Length: 157
Image (cartoon, rainbow, N blue to C red; front, side, top):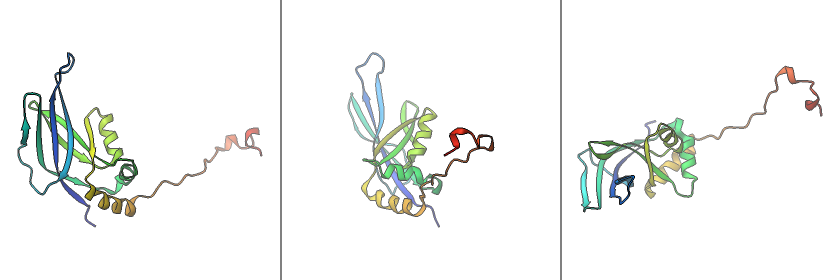
């Protein structure tokens, strides 16, 4: 079976800050379906205090080994698309998009910039079908006590 894929464009925003410690802030503020190929970012608006760019041509693929992370995302009050971005030539550029809580957490543990933006409604149904097909919760297994503890007073019942 072919792995499900979504084509996406990412909306990034730059904001000038009036702060002595930080002069600007970058963040992903939206993700939408996109049929285009990767191109140079398109400036959607710009003024001295704020600017928005649309970065198109991103592919988001679902993997079976991330099914638990997709399940966690879907069952949250607000499902997200997680956008990992990096600074390149003075501009924030999206690098990786994921729908997995677990993958996003690993990226944040690696000290990457990751923003969560609301998941497009039309993606939820496809993701839910994928999760139903591949996610199997771990079953709790009873703890096996080593032989050295057998017969100890606390094990007697």
